[in-house]
Image (tube, rainbow over all chains, first blue to last red; front, side, top):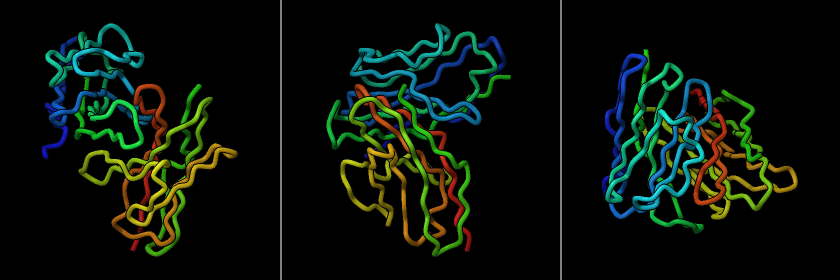
Length: 116
Length: 108
């Protein structure tokens, strides 16, 4: 089966511009997560969708970040306006089961965002 | 606060040597702990989880609640084990809390 896909793989923008990242989860996975790793730091949770609803958005750094998952399929993460500290790798993950010992989060390859 | 600590940024060993990647956590409830691995040019993938108590690719990890540790071990390292390893804690509705990661370099 196809894994989690993310687009673009790389994005280089200038401070103040807008960037939209896209994530396509594994088909049939209701849970979709966004994480990011900024340079030298650990991978940090941003938010969690269950279908089209935001289950947990406690990790979103500020209101410059907007995530959507219309129709409960793919998700977008928009950064507007981008700041230098937003540079990093943005990961998307999906899983099928909400809670349970067999649940596994499958990660996408990530989008490397560079803000100049 | 929930936290995962991986004290070593880099662990360098020779092929055939034993490996132990350290992971300590702080968590007020009953933790679910995982090891994820990222090989060069590949995506992050689950290596093993404590609840399964299984060995994957020769790696094992035992949850020690007294020491709040979940160290990853392998008796004989192979060159193909070279990768970034992340320890992670799950809380709430599947949110993962990651450590900073340890790069394992296995030399011939």
